[in-house]
Image (tube, rainbow, N blue to C red; front, side, top):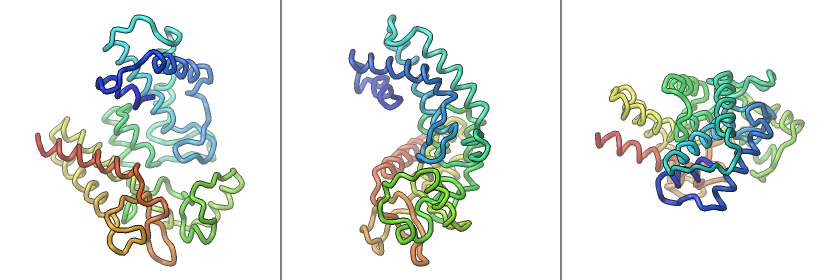
Length: 282
């Protein structure tokens, strides 16, 4: 929803009658299910909980829609008149309770650092500068020597994953299967994902462009360098110059997992390069 509205705001893909109607139905649906109190599987489709990384995109979509309504001078909404305000108020209040954590409810799934939260900072921009900096500070807990864990104690693509779990990377795990998979993980053997360093770089780029503080430019450069260093070389079984999903331990070596190349990583890196170009041009 947020991405579709961004295209409309930029004049690249105006909202048509059908799309306008559908957006209204989706917003009313989110209101009906009280999405701000809803438990879902989160960014990583694991563990039923209230995930800040799920609430953030809903809030971003609502805010963008209200901006579009004002920009286009729309007098008749495709949803209940107060739905955007109800959603924004409740989503913001719930996010304020959870952040800078990813989850606090239920208690057994509390997570104080999750790389998915970087997307609330960039590109969604639904957190204050103060909160955004708290989020990226906490990401130090999930930084590895190549890239970043999704979260600590994440067993997806853990050491020797294919030998222990199987070679189907799309498999859905029940809660009981997740418990078994988690039991296979040893500390420090979480997969390191290449999606996040580019986004952290881009976020620090936005901070530098806003404040002109050299410390943010240096951090932008650091995380861009990490992202570029994770591009595959000639020794990769999938070929050189590939953007990986993640590196995982297999037979004692860190290697790209099977989802290589990954378009998600490619576009993240492209956005990091875009923000660096903007920073250097100022």
